[in-house]
Length: 211
Image 1 (cartoon, rainbow, N blue to C red):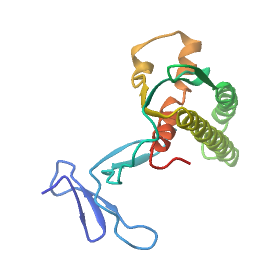
Image 2: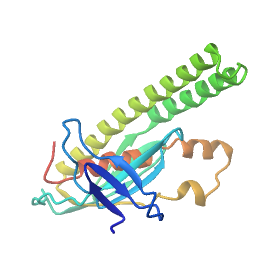
Image 3: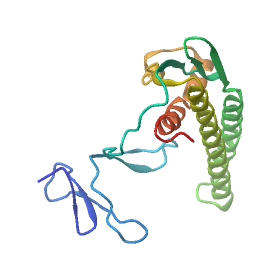
Image 4: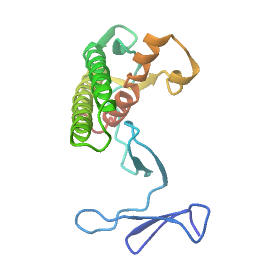
Protein backbone atom coordinates (compact mmCIF):
# COMPACT_ATOMS: atom_id res chain seq x y z
CA UNK A 1 0.00 0.00 0.00
CA UNK A 2 1.31 3.49 -0.89
CA UNK A 3 2.26 5.82 1.96
CA UNK A 4 0.05 8.49 0.33
CA UNK A 5 -3.23 7.63 -1.35
CA UNK A 6 -6.75 8.93 -1.94
CA UNK A 7 -9.90 6.93 -1.25
CA UNK A 8 -13.49 8.18 -1.26
CA UNK A 9 -12.43 11.83 -1.20
CA UNK A 10 -10.06 11.30 1.72
CA UNK A 11 -6.29 11.69 1.74
CA UNK A 12 -4.79 8.74 3.59
CA UNK A 13 -1.27 9.08 5.03
CA UNK A 14 0.63 6.16 6.45
CA UNK A 15 1.72 6.46 10.11
CA UNK A 16 3.55 3.15 10.33
CA UNK A 17 0.50 1.55 11.92
CA UNK A 18 -1.66 -0.07 9.20
CA UNK A 19 -4.72 0.08 11.43
CA UNK A 20 -4.35 3.79 12.26
CA UNK A 21 -3.49 5.88 9.19
CA UNK A 22 -3.97 9.64 9.18
CA UNK A 23 -7.15 10.46 7.23
CA UNK A 24 -7.86 14.00 5.96
CA UNK A 25 -10.74 15.31 3.86
CA UNK A 26 -9.32 15.99 0.39
CA UNK A 27 -12.04 17.87 -1.51
CA UNK A 28 -12.19 21.53 -2.50
CA UNK A 29 -15.05 23.97 -1.81
CA UNK A 30 -16.99 22.62 -4.79
CA UNK A 31 -16.72 19.04 -3.57
CA UNK A 32 -14.19 17.95 -6.21
CA UNK A 33 -11.46 15.59 -5.07
CA UNK A 34 -8.03 17.22 -5.17
CA UNK A 35 -5.12 15.62 -7.03
CA UNK A 36 -2.81 13.18 -5.28
CA UNK A 37 0.28 15.03 -3.97
CA UNK A 38 3.81 13.81 -4.59
CA UNK A 39 4.71 14.08 -0.90
CA UNK A 40 3.13 15.26 2.35
CA UNK A 41 4.20 16.15 5.87
CA UNK A 42 2.68 17.48 9.09
CA UNK A 43 4.43 20.34 10.87
CA UNK A 44 3.97 23.30 13.20
CA UNK A 45 3.02 26.66 11.68
CA UNK A 46 5.28 29.75 12.00
CA UNK A 47 3.44 30.98 15.11
CA UNK A 48 3.93 27.54 16.72
CA UNK A 49 0.24 27.42 17.61
CA UNK A 50 -1.23 24.88 15.19
CA UNK A 51 -0.33 21.87 13.09
CA UNK A 52 -0.43 22.30 9.32
CA UNK A 53 -0.35 19.93 6.36
CA UNK A 54 2.28 20.64 3.70
CA UNK A 55 2.04 18.89 0.35
CA UNK A 56 4.16 18.94 -2.80
CA UNK A 57 3.06 18.51 -6.41
CA UNK A 58 5.04 18.02 -9.60
CA UNK A 59 5.00 21.22 -11.67
CA UNK A 60 4.12 20.00 -15.16
CA UNK A 61 3.55 23.43 -16.67
CA UNK A 62 5.28 24.03 -19.98
CA UNK A 63 8.57 25.89 -19.64
CA UNK A 64 8.65 28.85 -21.98
CA UNK A 65 11.75 30.40 -23.45
CA UNK A 66 13.56 32.72 -20.98
CA UNK A 67 13.72 36.44 -21.82
CA UNK A 68 17.53 36.59 -21.90
CA UNK A 69 20.82 34.85 -21.19
CA UNK A 70 22.17 36.93 -18.30
CA UNK A 71 23.22 35.64 -14.88
CA UNK A 72 22.47 37.47 -11.63
CA UNK A 73 23.42 36.91 -8.01
CA UNK A 74 21.06 37.77 -5.17
CA UNK A 75 22.42 38.22 -1.66
CA UNK A 76 19.68 38.09 0.97
CA UNK A 77 20.15 40.28 4.03
CA UNK A 78 18.38 41.53 7.15
CA UNK A 79 18.94 45.28 6.71
CA UNK A 80 18.78 45.01 2.92
CA UNK A 81 16.33 42.29 1.98
CA UNK A 82 18.10 41.76 -1.34
CA UNK A 83 21.19 42.98 -3.16
CA UNK A 84 20.95 42.09 -6.85
CA UNK A 85 24.14 42.02 -8.94
CA UNK A 86 23.77 41.39 -12.67
CA UNK A 87 27.47 41.61 -13.58
CA UNK A 88 27.38 45.35 -14.20
CA UNK A 89 25.44 47.01 -11.43
CA UNK A 90 24.07 46.39 -7.93
CA UNK A 91 20.45 47.12 -7.02
CA UNK A 92 19.60 47.29 -3.30
CA UNK A 93 16.18 46.56 -1.79
CA UNK A 94 15.70 47.81 1.77
CA UNK A 95 14.48 45.66 4.65
CA UNK A 96 14.26 48.50 7.19
CA UNK A 97 10.45 48.56 7.28
CA UNK A 98 10.34 44.82 7.93
CA UNK A 99 12.88 45.12 10.73
CA UNK A 100 11.04 48.04 12.30
CA UNK A 101 7.70 46.24 12.07
CA UNK A 102 9.13 43.07 13.62
CA UNK A 103 10.73 45.11 16.41
CA UNK A 104 7.34 46.65 17.18
CA UNK A 105 5.68 43.23 17.09
CA UNK A 106 8.21 41.74 19.52
CA UNK A 107 7.98 44.70 21.90
CA UNK A 108 4.20 44.89 21.81
CA UNK A 109 3.87 41.12 22.04
CA UNK A 110 6.10 41.02 25.13
CA UNK A 111 3.97 43.67 26.87
CA UNK A 112 0.77 41.83 26.05
CA UNK A 113 2.26 38.54 27.23
CA UNK A 114 3.24 40.13 30.55
CA UNK A 115 -0.34 41.32 31.01
CA UNK A 116 -1.68 37.91 29.99
CA UNK A 117 0.53 36.17 32.57
CA UNK A 118 -0.87 38.43 35.30
CA UNK A 119 -4.48 37.42 34.57
CA UNK A 120 -6.34 34.33 35.67
CA UNK A 121 -6.20 31.70 32.97
CA UNK A 122 -9.54 31.38 31.21
CA UNK A 123 -10.93 34.67 32.50
CA UNK A 124 -12.56 37.18 30.15
CA UNK A 125 -9.60 39.57 30.42
CA UNK A 126 -7.15 36.72 29.84
CA UNK A 127 -8.97 35.65 26.68
CA UNK A 128 -9.35 39.25 25.45
CA UNK A 129 -5.61 39.89 25.80
CA UNK A 130 -4.79 36.59 24.07
CA UNK A 131 -7.06 37.60 21.21
CA UNK A 132 -5.49 41.07 21.01
CA UNK A 133 -2.03 39.53 20.78
CA UNK A 134 -3.12 37.05 18.12
CA UNK A 135 -4.79 39.76 16.01
CA UNK A 136 -1.75 42.05 16.30
CA UNK A 137 0.60 39.29 15.17
CA UNK A 138 -1.73 38.36 12.30
CA UNK A 139 -1.85 41.98 11.15
CA UNK A 140 1.94 42.29 11.22
CA UNK A 141 2.26 39.01 9.33
CA UNK A 142 -0.13 40.20 6.60
CA UNK A 143 1.71 43.50 6.27
CA UNK A 144 5.06 41.73 6.01
CA UNK A 145 3.79 39.27 3.43
CA UNK A 146 2.37 42.08 1.31
CA UNK A 147 5.64 44.00 1.46
CA UNK A 148 7.70 40.90 0.61
CA UNK A 149 5.45 40.19 -2.37
CA UNK A 150 5.91 43.72 -3.68
CA UNK A 151 9.66 43.67 -3.13
CA UNK A 152 9.97 40.29 -4.85
CA UNK A 153 8.06 41.76 -7.80
CA UNK A 154 10.51 44.68 -7.88
CA UNK A 155 13.47 42.28 -7.90
CA UNK A 156 11.94 40.28 -10.75
CA UNK A 157 11.34 43.50 -12.70
CA UNK A 158 15.01 44.35 -12.26
CA UNK A 159 16.06 40.92 -13.53
CA UNK A 160 13.72 41.13 -16.47
CA UNK A 161 14.99 44.54 -17.53
CA UNK A 162 18.56 43.22 -17.70
CA UNK A 163 17.72 39.98 -19.58
CA UNK A 164 18.59 37.60 -16.75
CA UNK A 165 18.01 33.88 -17.24
CA UNK A 166 19.94 32.36 -14.32
CA UNK A 167 19.67 33.46 -10.69
CA UNK A 168 22.03 32.35 -7.91
CA UNK A 169 20.97 32.77 -4.27
CA UNK A 170 23.11 31.93 -1.23
CA UNK A 171 22.09 29.05 1.04
CA UNK A 172 20.71 30.45 4.33
CA UNK A 173 18.71 27.39 5.35
CA UNK A 174 20.49 26.75 8.67
CA UNK A 175 21.96 30.15 9.52
CA UNK A 176 19.81 30.43 12.66
CA UNK A 177 21.18 27.19 14.10
CA UNK A 178 24.79 27.10 12.94
CA UNK A 179 25.85 30.55 14.18
CA UNK A 180 25.58 32.51 17.42
CA UNK A 181 25.79 36.27 16.91
CA UNK A 182 24.81 37.37 20.42
CA UNK A 183 21.44 38.10 22.01
CA UNK A 184 20.52 41.21 19.99
CA UNK A 185 21.54 39.86 16.59
CA UNK A 186 20.06 36.44 17.28
CA UNK A 187 16.69 38.12 17.96
CA UNK A 188 16.93 39.91 14.61
CA UNK A 189 17.79 36.63 12.86
CA UNK A 190 14.74 34.92 14.32
CA UNK A 191 12.60 37.74 12.96
CA UNK A 192 14.31 37.59 9.58
CA UNK A 193 11.77 36.62 6.93
CA UNK A 194 14.20 35.34 4.31
CA UNK A 195 12.26 32.10 3.78
CA UNK A 196 9.07 34.04 3.07
CA UNK A 197 10.93 36.36 0.72
CA UNK A 198 12.58 33.48 -1.14
CA UNK A 199 9.17 31.81 -1.45
CA UNK A 200 7.70 34.97 -2.97
CA UNK A 201 10.73 35.33 -5.23
CA UNK A 202 10.54 31.72 -6.41
CA UNK A 203 6.84 32.04 -7.20
CA UNK A 204 7.54 35.03 -9.44
CA UNK A 205 10.76 33.80 -11.03
CA UNK A 206 8.79 31.86 -13.61
CA UNK A 207 10.12 33.25 -16.85
CA UNK A 208 6.96 32.25 -18.64
CA UNK A 209 4.81 34.34 -16.30
CA UNK A 210 6.36 37.79 -16.14
CA UNK A 211 3.87 40.22 -14.59
